[in-house]
Length: 144
Image (cartoon, rainbow, N blue to C red):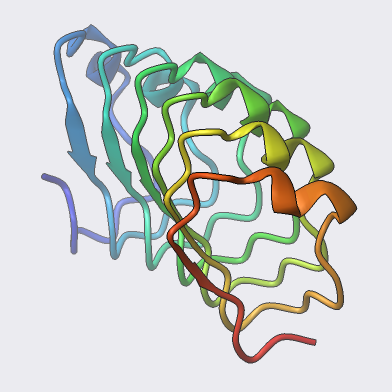
Protein backbone atom coordinates (compact mmCIF):
# COMPACT_ATOMS: atom_id res chain seq x y z
CA UNK A 1 0.00 0.00 0.00
CA UNK A 2 1.55 3.26 -1.18
CA UNK A 3 -1.41 5.60 -0.92
CA UNK A 4 -1.27 9.16 0.45
CA UNK A 5 2.46 9.50 -0.20
CA UNK A 6 2.52 12.23 -2.85
CA UNK A 7 4.65 9.92 -5.02
CA UNK A 8 5.50 11.09 -8.52
CA UNK A 9 7.23 7.83 -9.42
CA UNK A 10 7.35 4.29 -8.18
CA UNK A 11 10.57 2.41 -7.48
CA UNK A 12 11.63 0.27 -10.43
CA UNK A 13 11.95 -2.70 -8.06
CA UNK A 14 8.16 -2.95 -7.94
CA UNK A 15 8.37 -5.16 -11.04
CA UNK A 16 9.98 -7.88 -8.93
CA UNK A 17 6.75 -8.34 -6.91
CA UNK A 18 5.48 -11.00 -9.31
CA UNK A 19 2.95 -12.51 -6.87
CA UNK A 20 1.34 -9.18 -5.92
CA UNK A 21 -2.45 -9.36 -6.30
CA UNK A 22 -3.51 -5.88 -5.08
CA UNK A 23 -1.77 -2.55 -5.47
CA UNK A 24 -3.03 0.59 -3.72
CA UNK A 25 -1.59 3.75 -5.24
CA UNK A 26 -4.43 6.17 -4.59
CA UNK A 27 -3.89 9.78 -3.50
CA UNK A 28 -0.46 10.24 -4.97
CA UNK A 29 0.73 12.47 -7.79
CA UNK A 30 1.34 9.89 -10.49
CA UNK A 31 1.07 11.32 -14.01
CA UNK A 32 1.70 8.03 -15.82
CA UNK A 33 1.11 4.41 -14.97
CA UNK A 34 4.65 3.04 -14.76
CA UNK A 35 5.42 0.19 -17.15
CA UNK A 36 6.73 -1.77 -14.16
CA UNK A 37 3.15 -2.00 -12.90
CA UNK A 38 2.08 -3.38 -16.26
CA UNK A 39 4.45 -6.30 -15.69
CA UNK A 40 2.70 -7.45 -12.51
CA UNK A 41 0.86 -10.31 -14.16
CA UNK A 42 -0.73 -11.63 -10.93
CA UNK A 43 -2.37 -8.30 -10.15
CA UNK A 44 -6.13 -8.60 -9.60
CA UNK A 45 -6.92 -5.17 -8.09
CA UNK A 46 -5.37 -1.84 -9.00
CA UNK A 47 -6.37 1.32 -7.15
CA UNK A 48 -5.18 4.50 -8.86
CA UNK A 49 -7.83 7.01 -7.86
CA UNK A 50 -6.92 10.60 -6.92
CA UNK A 51 -3.75 10.90 -8.97
CA UNK A 52 -2.76 13.03 -11.97
CA UNK A 53 -2.99 10.30 -14.61
CA UNK A 54 -3.54 11.66 -18.12
CA UNK A 55 -3.37 8.34 -19.94
CA UNK A 56 -3.21 4.61 -19.45
CA UNK A 57 -0.36 3.04 -21.42
CA UNK A 58 -1.06 0.38 -24.01
CA UNK A 59 1.17 -1.90 -21.90
CA UNK A 60 -1.67 -2.21 -19.38
CA UNK A 61 -3.06 -4.90 -21.67
CA UNK A 62 -0.57 -7.26 -19.99
CA UNK A 63 -2.62 -7.21 -16.79
CA UNK A 64 -4.58 -10.29 -17.86
CA UNK A 65 -5.73 -11.19 -14.34
CA UNK A 66 -6.99 -7.73 -13.43
CA UNK A 67 -10.53 -7.78 -12.02
CA UNK A 68 -10.85 -4.33 -10.40
CA UNK A 69 -9.54 -1.09 -11.83
CA UNK A 70 -10.22 2.17 -9.99
CA UNK A 71 -9.24 5.27 -11.96
CA UNK A 72 -11.59 7.91 -10.59
CA UNK A 73 -10.43 11.48 -9.97
CA UNK A 74 -7.62 11.63 -12.49
CA UNK A 75 -7.18 13.59 -15.72
CA UNK A 76 -7.95 10.88 -18.24
CA UNK A 77 -9.30 12.04 -21.60
CA UNK A 78 -9.50 8.59 -23.18
CA UNK A 79 -8.98 4.89 -22.63
CA UNK A 80 -6.67 2.91 -24.89
CA UNK A 81 -8.23 0.46 -27.31
CA UNK A 82 -6.06 -2.20 -25.67
CA UNK A 83 -8.53 -2.23 -22.77
CA UNK A 84 -10.11 -5.13 -24.65
CA UNK A 85 -7.29 -7.40 -23.40
CA UNK A 86 -8.50 -7.07 -19.80
CA UNK A 87 -10.89 -9.98 -20.24
CA UNK A 88 -11.28 -10.71 -16.51
CA UNK A 89 -12.09 -7.12 -15.58
CA UNK A 90 -15.24 -6.99 -13.43
CA UNK A 91 -15.14 -3.46 -11.97
CA UNK A 92 -14.15 -0.36 -13.91
CA UNK A 93 -14.50 2.96 -12.09
CA UNK A 94 -13.79 6.08 -14.18
CA UNK A 95 -15.69 8.82 -12.33
CA UNK A 96 -14.41 12.39 -12.24
CA UNK A 97 -12.14 12.41 -15.27
CA UNK A 98 -12.32 14.22 -18.60
CA UNK A 99 -13.40 11.34 -20.81
CA UNK A 100 -15.14 12.47 -23.99
CA UNK A 101 -15.76 8.97 -25.33
CA UNK A 102 -15.27 5.28 -24.61
CA UNK A 103 -13.53 2.99 -27.10
CA UNK A 104 -15.86 0.60 -28.90
CA UNK A 105 -13.57 -2.19 -27.63
CA UNK A 106 -15.17 -1.81 -24.22
CA UNK A 107 -17.86 -4.14 -25.55
CA UNK A 108 -15.32 -6.96 -25.34
CA UNK A 109 -15.15 -6.79 -21.54
CA UNK A 110 -17.57 -9.68 -21.15
CA UNK A 111 -16.89 -10.12 -17.41
CA UNK A 112 -17.64 -6.49 -16.54
CA UNK A 113 -20.31 -6.26 -13.83
CA UNK A 114 -19.78 -2.65 -12.67
CA UNK A 115 -19.06 0.39 -14.82
CA UNK A 116 -19.12 3.85 -13.32
CA UNK A 117 -18.34 6.87 -15.51
CA UNK A 118 -19.98 9.73 -13.61
CA UNK A 119 -18.76 13.31 -13.97
CA UNK A 120 -16.98 13.11 -17.30
CA UNK A 121 -17.60 14.79 -20.66
CA UNK A 122 -19.36 11.95 -22.43
CA UNK A 123 -22.08 12.82 -24.92
CA UNK A 124 -22.72 9.27 -26.15
CA UNK A 125 -21.83 5.64 -25.59
CA UNK A 126 -20.45 3.19 -28.15
CA UNK A 127 -23.23 1.77 -30.31
CA UNK A 128 -22.50 -1.85 -29.34
CA UNK A 129 -22.39 -1.02 -25.63
CA UNK A 130 -25.47 -3.22 -25.16
CA UNK A 131 -23.31 -6.33 -25.65
CA UNK A 132 -22.08 -6.01 -22.05
CA UNK A 133 -24.41 -8.78 -20.90
CA UNK A 134 -22.78 -9.27 -17.47
CA UNK A 135 -23.14 -5.61 -16.50
CA UNK A 136 -25.19 -5.29 -13.27
CA UNK A 137 -24.30 -1.76 -12.11
CA UNK A 138 -23.95 1.14 -14.50
CA UNK A 139 -23.69 4.82 -13.62
CA UNK A 140 -23.23 7.63 -16.11
CA UNK A 141 -24.53 10.67 -14.20
CA UNK A 142 -23.41 14.26 -14.72
CA UNK A 143 -21.76 14.06 -18.11
CA UNK A 144 -21.34 16.51 -21.01
